[in-house]
Image (tube, rainbow, N blue to C red; front, side):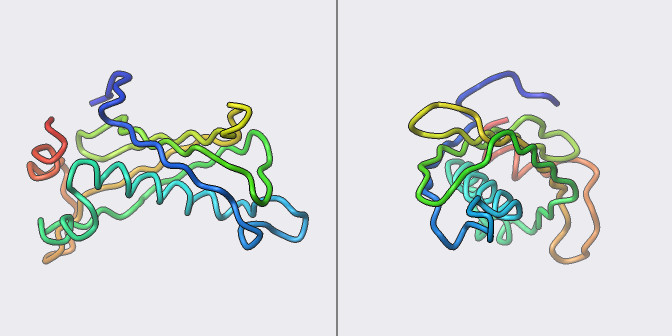
Length: 140
């Protein structure tokens, strides 16, 4: 099911890029944006008390099966960013949208999404419905 715009299902983190985030051209290396998404997604899940530890304890793993990153403007070392993760879909799969903006200018630099599916930790079988434990944690 698609979620309507609802800040309840969003989490924003602050992150200042480091020199080690950049490539030889002095801009943040493209692969690091997935790490930035991960930090915001982790904050979103923790907001609902369903972090990685709770996921494993619930008997489900949530591998990413699809991801997209749209690079709108480059970011550089020591740039302050706001990274927002928003739950957009939760039936049959989880889709989380991401937006990264420059904290000083408010300019969007990056957007994207990840899609995750529930997999039984014991059988390794994919669930074709969202487990009730996820719905319970997120109040859905």
